[in-house]
Amino acid sequence: LEGNSDLRSTPYQNYSPAYLATLEAQQQRSRWRLGYHIQPRSGLINDPNGFAYFANQWHLFKQQFPFGPVHGLKSWGHLTSNDLAHWQDQGTALHPHSPYTTNGVYSGSALPVKDRLFMMYTGNVRTADGGRRTTQLGAWMERSGHITELAEPLIAEPPAGYTSHFRDPQLIEHNGTYYALIGAQRADKQGQILLYTAAAPTGPWQLIGPLDFGRTTLGEMIECPNLAFVDGQVALLFCPQGMAQRDCAYQNVYPNTVVVAAGIDWQNAALIVPSPLRLLDEGFDAYAGHVVNRPNGEALMIAWMGLPDLSYPSDQEGWQGCYSLARRLGIRNGRLHQVPIDEPLLGPPFAPLHDKLNLQEVITLTTAAHRSGQIRLGNAQESLSLTIDSAAQALTIDRTETGVPFALQYGTKRTVPLAAGPQRLQLWLDHSSFELSVANGQHFASGRIFPQVSAPWRMTADTGLVTAATGRRLNNM
Ligand code: FRU
View 1 (cartoon, rainbow, N blue to C red):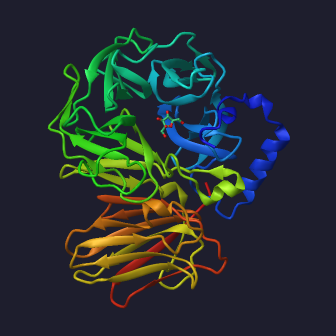
View 2: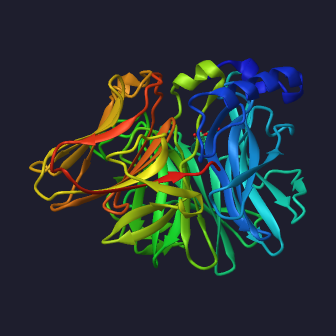
View 3: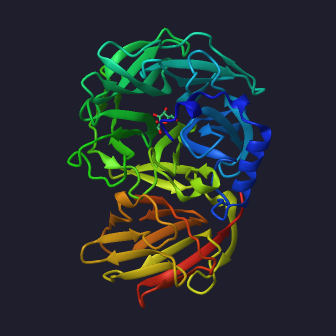
């Protein structure tokens, strides 16, 4: 269906309100509906876009196709929040209606500039010969929420020597100069991140060159480059497609990777002392991690808990995709740490090793040093298991038996390395998702699950493995 040209170009007004209402009702009734994560009202969501703090509230936009669980004609849906945990749906912000977006308003970012929010994003057009034309576009949002799209592209075409896989601009301001990172593919099918600069967000934009993040090419195409300033250093997040396993071992169809560096040399388009390439998330479903820097220096990220080119069991109910919790980023010992923001959602405590789970909770566990064994969350038929092998210093997450099988060709287990000693694990469950933090966010693993048996879930653990367990229910968003 991804290649279905009708869904990529049929105007939204051709879908009847009754059809949309049916899809929304199906999503509302779904047993996989999430309680406290961003999800579509109907249809599909993928990349988080335009994360910003503006006009006294948080703004987040989502790549969406509201009319089915497929990557159809994309627009930007708008969400706002006061606390990064409860999000209000503000409807569609950027519609695919200009000659530059006939086949979708693709991903991008947003940055407060004086008293307006500037949005920079990709316009996607399919040409008659089956090709593609991409432009980088701009729009202003007033404090009232009113949006004015710029009539002409900020960047009208990829530079010479590049294909039309040229998208997902991240707009950054540094000492009064503007920069944009853009995902790109060189004509020889090498993935790159291009760095542009301008004196004003409206341009004119000039190419500095491909960003050196320890290398300048990786895989066949790089999507969604995002740079964050974290604890006096920088973290560069991006999604290389078609990357060789020797560059960074991964199991998902495409990984979301991260490089940490001491800083960035803007003039020379180079990260300073870049770390090796690592996975941003060691789980099953994480992509397009999108960052924002607050004026107070804090760096936050939200990722799509989903992957391109996959089907999910919720497709049969007409919807697909959800986002991670917003996470605070930190860098310790040259590694990125992620800590989910759940404080505004915390409900009553419960006893995880005793009480039933309602699949909407956070569980905090400490395990004994030098102990191997298994923790199981589930019922007799279905369960998610976490197996600690203390000799191998590894934690294996197994979703084989969690419910409706999917994405089997990419494996149903993931292994995360552990340091020696007792382990601190935190697990956020939300009906059809889990987020697992290991060692206070030093490692992170996210995934979707689709339980189908209605028997209640409980947590059990091998004797002596868990030395402390606390739980909190989480309220609906
Ligand atoms: C990543 C991506 C982006 C593109 C968007 C379209 O998932 O393919 O590169 O802008 O999704 O929805």
